[in-house]
Structures are given as structure tokens and as C-alpha cells.
Amino acid sequence: MKSLTNLQLDRSVIDWPVYMGRALQLAQNVLTATPNPRVGCVLVEAGKIVGEGWHKAAGQDHAEVMALLAAGDRAAGATAFVSLEPCAHQGRTGPCCDALAAAGVARVVIASVDPNPAVAGQGVSKLEAAGIEVYQLIDMDPAARKINPGYFKRRETGLPFVRLKLAMSLDGRTALANGQSQWITGDAARADVQRLRASSSAVLTGVMTVLADNPALTVRADQLAQSSAVNEHDEFAAQRQPLRVILDSQLRTPGTARIITEPGAVTIYVLSAELETDQLPDNVEVKQVMAGERGVDLQSVLESLARDFECNELLVEAGATLSGEFIRLGLVDELVVYIAPRLIGSDGKALLEMTGLTELAQSESFAIKELLQVGSDLRLVLEPANDNQERLHG
Ligand SMILES: NC(=O)c1ccc[n+]([C@@H]2O[C@H](COP(=O)([O-])OP(=O)(O)OC[C@H]3O[C@@H](n4cnc5c(N)ncnc54)[C@H](OP(=O)(O)O)[C@@H]3O)[C@@H](O)[C@H]2O)c1
Image (cartoon, rainbow, N blue to C red; front, side, top):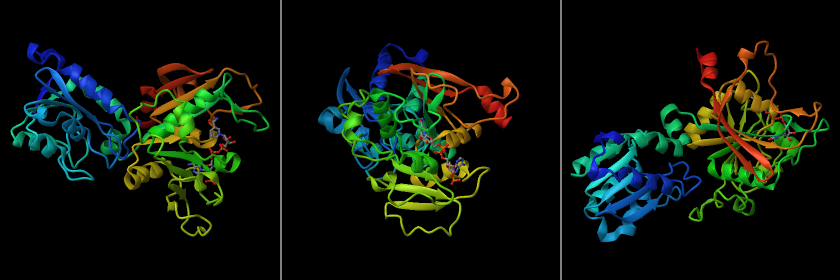
């Protein structure tokens, strides 16, 4: 495989980043393809796009196969632009390398090498063995990885990408002193949370939120439709429910809780194997993990979600206690904070349970990735600043 930087692109291949940009755009036609990555493919022959494809959902055709079907005979001699290295193994569908070779594709251009050990580099080798030239546009690798933060993180570290969602008033409160909180934010922000859920492999909460609010934490087609971020091609977005996960040391979640009775699978992490599970229906799996400083050990939960459930992107929608623990332990990759322009007062409930700092230098800091008005509220997307990592690990 030849790696090419943008500076190495001569006149004959100057359009390649444009076609790859289109492949990256197609990959994002879906909110998720979990546990698979989002992938897009464009087939170009004689300067014309002859086929396009994207991976719609696990079990559906891969992007390359969809593009080959669209191109038909025009795929012979074409160049395939694929956002991720084509697969070399037999999964739920056949290896894409074989399909590309059988169609007579002359050249394959990728943005990223697949970190999956069953593919990593083997897709490239298989294509080259079939006489197909393979190139990587390495300047487009970061943009391609950003499309699948969870898939890359799980394959490379054994942990899911953790997105923590918070909703608060302008003065950083989540509820009145009497506990009343539903709903701080408006309809548009709540529809946007539906988009976050539909993009996630799993949604996680704490037992106290289950007992206090009885949330379903499901994707609801009518509300999701209000989120303008759903693409018309994403036909499976509202059909799939993310795994719902409850952290509940003593198994206090009642079998009648909406999070359990609504459609979809549920996993409850507990501390003891001795707990009574008879009251729970078949869609619920109870898993024992080791104890953490407070409740169940969050690192073990994340490892289990990646290993046992192929969880790429995890959305945490919990109260101040559990959200605070995720932040304190440095386990959050991205914060999504909805800010409602209203004031609740200093006797309102705090956003996070985190106390005891004596120096400003000890505080967690974040870098702003995005700031957007959503309906009447604001959405702030942040990532941990580098100095947090140094404080935690070095
Ligand atoms: N504004 C928002 O975005 C938002 C979102 C969700 C909830 N809420 C509000 O939050 C309130 C509930 O918040 P909360 O703080 O009491 O509950 P929470 O954070 O949802 O759940 C906390 C519980 O999770 C369990 N847990 C297990 N392992 C844990 C660990 N490692 N670290 C921390 N907790 C662990 C603990 O119970 P065990 O010891 O029994 O395991 C703990 O009491 C509700 O009133 C709800 O309305 C607000």
C-alpha cells in the first residue's frame, strides 16, 4: 500500500480527496451501524461517479457491496474510495475484498486502516494479492476516525467511547430544591437527545434515576423525527433500540420499571451474585462486577460493555452522583451539555456531585468542540483538556 499526503497528489490524482470526502459523507448517512463502523464508498470510472454505497446497519450490505451493485458492469477498471480498509474476513456478510476483486476494480483508495484484528492490514494484503493497487490518503485519516470514535476506541483500547449528557439551567442547576426537574430544556433539545440515543450502542444510567424518574431511555420514532440531524437514508434509525444499562449494586430496579418493560435489551450491573432476579423479565441480563470506590467499578463496567456487548459509543444519562463519578475518574471522552436559559437559584440541585477541591489547579477543565443553539436552548459539546489527563495519569 502506498501512503499519500495531500502534498504528494499530482494532477492525475488531484480529485481523490474530493471523492474520499464524498465517501466520508456517505458513511454519515446513518447515526449508527453498531457494532460495525459507519463506512462510505464511492466508485469512480473515467472521472465519473458510477456507484455509491454506505453501510446501513449490521447484517446489511457493506458500503463496498452497495456501491458495486449500483455500478454494475461500470465497476470494472474503476477506482474505489472507501472510508475504511475493506474487510478480508467472513462476517455476517462476505469479505468486501473478494467482491471488489471479482468486480474488476483496478484501484482501492482508503482513508483509515481498520483497527479490527480480523482485518488490520489483511484487507490491503488481500487486495494487493489480487492485483489491485491500494493507496491510503493519510491526511484524511483523522477525519475518517472522527466518524467512528467508538469503533476505533473499542478496537484499540478495549473500552467504548463515553459521551456524558447533562442538562442544566443557566445557573448550573438540574432541578428545584424540591426535586422537580422535568423538563428543564425544551422540545428541540429533547429531540436532540433522541439523536444521541439513536447514535449510541448503549445508554447507561444509575439506579437512583430509575427510581426517581422511571425513564424509558429508548429511541422514540416520533421524537427522533423532530431531530433535523436524521438523514432520509437512515431507514433503521428508529427501529433499533440501544442496549439500556443500569448500575444498581443491590438490584433495586423493579421489574415494572419502564426502562425494562419498553422494547429492547437491558443489562444491570450488580455487586453480588446472590441477588434475587426472579422478578425480572427475559430481556434483562444481570451481570456481577467488582466493587469500585462507590458502587460498581466503572472501569470494569466499560470493559464488559466493550467485550461482552461490542459497545462502540456509550451515552451516559445519569444523575449528579454517577455523572460526577464518571468525570472524577477521567472516563468521559465527550460532554454534551444542554443549557436552558432559565435561572433556578442557589438552592437548586447541583449538576454534578463533586466536592473537596482546594486549588483551582485541581479542577477538571474542558475544551469546547461545538456551541449551537437548539430550539430555545444551547448545546455545548466539550472534550477533556489535556492537562486533566496529565493530572490523572502522570
Ligand atoms: N438533568 C439531567 O440531565 C438528569 C439526567 C438524569 C437524572 N437526573 C436526575 O438525577 C436524579 C438522580 O440522581 P442521583 O445522583 O441520585 O442518581 P444517579 O447518579 O442516577 O444514580 C446513582 C446511583 O447509581 C448507583 N451506582 C452504582 N455504581 C455507582 C458508581 N460507581 N458511582 C456512582 N453511583 C453508582 C448507586 O446506587 P447503588 O449504590 O444502589 O448501586 C448510586 O446511588 C433524579 O432526580 C433525576 O431526575 C437528571
